[in-house]
Image 1 (cartoon, rainbow, N blue to C red):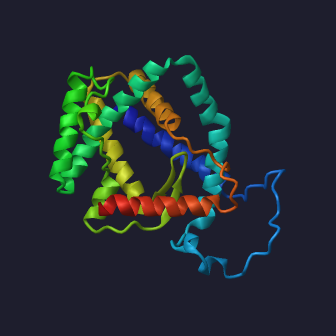
Image 2 (cartoon, rainbow, N blue to C red):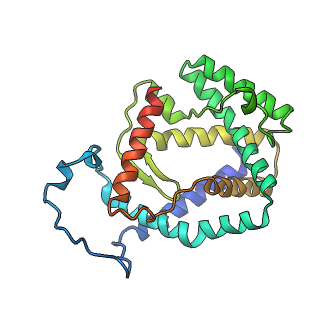
Length: 251
């Protein structure tokens, strides 16, 4: 087990400690919050599709959603904006392609675990082409010839073998998930760490690489908290996530 992983475990544990303390209080309303003009029915949860999925950890999830929104606004998005400002578009695209290419390894393994052999074959072909002709994944030469990028993770693998999604949960900084998908995320992270270990990188290099990957991931997501204009943004996002994962597991 690498030094980076050990340190990461301690950092995550420390982060959770702070988050749990922070989530013990109810977040204040924004100063410009507008009170509902129409009285809502008492049985709101029994009406409409947005209440289709139970949310037994809703109190914690809503506070974590608020925490993530503020972390996004004051820390993550400014860092992403600085990264995009100083990085030429062609370099930004190359970095994005590089991390996508590393992600093909997880997709390949999980495709095999789900007995999706055509997907595994296509993913292996993409990885081989992009790692060689695409210069270590900096260029995506596989997509133009018809090898489409797939997305398989261990949460989907667990779902394929009949493991239920479990309660909905909003993860610190990572956002919507479920108990099953969060468990799968731990496995995928350990598998990715094994790949990084094979590259024989120093601890500083690993940290730098992890930071750039996190920035690239957020940079590619157009979502912005509290920009939907809906009072039910939290419920909508929960519904979209649950439906999206059901489709991914079923296909």
